[in-house]
Length: 189
Image (cartoon, rainbow, N blue to C red; front, side, top):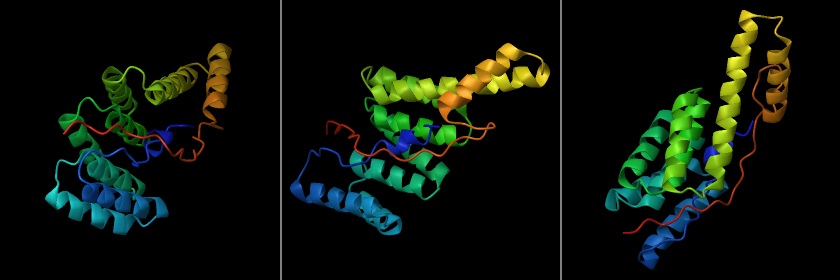
């Protein structure tokens, strides 16, 4: 299933607005993150954010790092803060959706993706991810229909089709590989 792709599609090598020193700091945090030094990258991001608390790229990176560390609730808090401070950016909504989906909170994921699309109607990743959420929600509904009526061959056929499309077998989600290289836009400062 592609649900983990939500937050992994957004690697924070952003086009930066600001002084070259700030850009260098963000690039160094990003390099540590990409190399897998999550603890060092988080320490550096926290240090940077202590003096630049509103920097969207650093906050975004911090959210990615926390998500990769499995600190889902902390990552949700970071991305939620970004959506409040920069509602015009679709990427934080998209990442929120990934985190909600990882917690099986599909209605919250759907809502976050709808906000991402409202913020940027041409954001193809959010449209694709919304399709994945709808497919997962349909799978859950067909499962319920079959639990109520095991003889419903139409629901079984549809469930099999959706599971195949999502890459699921026996109701278990497939693991998705991260897809790098989507770049969040730099917010106006």
